[in-house]
Length: 193
Image (cartoon, rainbow, N blue to C red; front, side):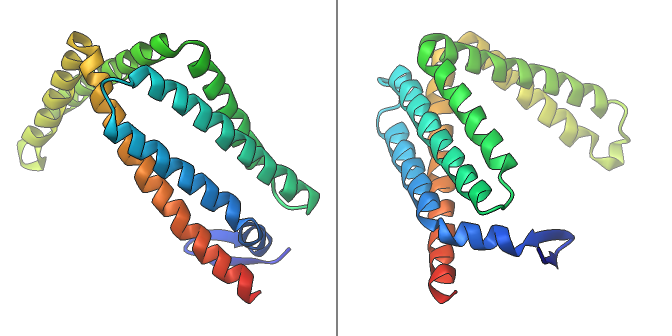
């Protein structure tokens, strides 16, 4: 298998060919991501639990598609390990979210709150060790903002869940669009090959 050095990384021609042949799987993943993002923006507050279930279904379907891509790559004697691990992780995440949707929302928001509080505290501690002319106050400001965000999530986790739903929707839209663009580029490469 020949490889082409590209920007410090090696890109396998076989992997590129496999992606080009399976461009429609990537396009389908992109469409599902865009649909999920639209739903997240249109009805965030009233359907937070429903969005967890929709996210669960998305993760299950995406996991199945990733495993299908891994099987196809394995049959063609191409690299498949990372695709299989991605698929299994997506399915596991989807099952947990489906079985415990309310708890999933609350735990997710509180986990982000804990991360914001801890990272904000570390940023503040680091700010006082940084020289003033190296941006001490910017680092301190970032730490304070992170701590305030964490406190707000702890005080009002369901409001935080709505905002996180919007962020998740934005991510899904951008991710879906990126996958669609990639899929059509791959489709063009597959047509010319």
